[in-house]
Amino acid sequence: MTSDSVRTIRTPAVRRAVVLLVHSNLFVAVGATSVAVTASVLCGYPLDPVPLAIVFAATLFVYSSNRLTDLAEDERNVPERAAFTRRYGRPLAAVALSCYLAVIGFAVARDLPKAQFLLLPAVVVGLYSLGRLKRLLLVKNLLVGVSWGIVPLGVGVYFGDLRPSLLAVAGYVTVMLTTAAAVFDVKDLRGDRAEGIRTLPVCFGPGTTRTVAQVVNLTAGVAVIGLVASGVLARSFLVLLAFNAYVGAYVPLATPDRGPLFYGFVIDGEHAVLAALVLALDALGWLGGG
Image 1 (cartoon, one colour):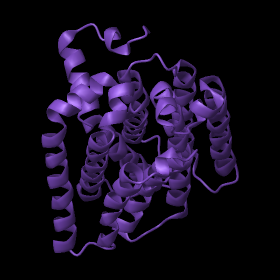
Image 2: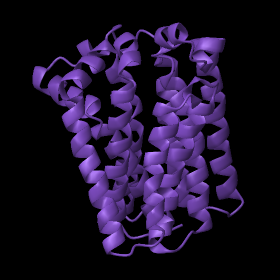
Image 3: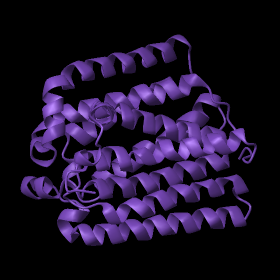
Image 4: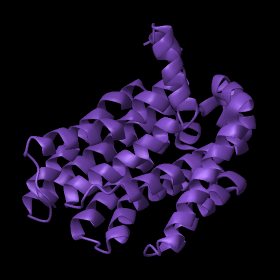
């Protein structure tokens, strides 16, 4: 892969489509929705479009808002994305806000259980984008990890059934997304250093960050095997090891000179890849409920 990963996409139409998906935050919203799909299938919940739509809209709102508040930092770290945000960011954020308010209105009108928790995305936006928490070492990464870990729990809350297997998936997602957030910081090394934002790559360097990420990734995989071997999780949860393999493959490639599409498409694509694998195996009858 070249120093600018945008150049690795040779077909102009494909490149434009990928740029639109990544910079518009549609792809990361699909990723979060994929987490809900994976959790639903593995833990034996039906694939209901309502919680999936809620996750998609809430994620789109959070990331679209973050693009606007982080515009100055993106000018230094990812100028191509900043240029996209300057041109399209406000109308896209307006659409995202409309979708978010629509799902809140729907939840209230349908009297969905724990509908008040739909305000959490707005809290996340405030803490991450408007506060100073992202300047504290690991706090930003943990906030991202916990926010994504809430996605599987939201599925259980919607169905009024928080199963032990779902709690395990939520913990797994939290750990893996905290790790991914730390790896993402590698691309922002120069800008974060200039802005005085303390991240693992800034404080310890990209090499140490990649090593820590791989250790956590390996530990999470071993934990999955242990939970399955002890009978806490069904054997179907071993499919999560494919996720660990995917992470293990991209972590060594995470360097400051990689373009935004490597991080926004290859890394964020991990969730969609896992969900597609889970759906395919389930369709073949190779998976069972958790």
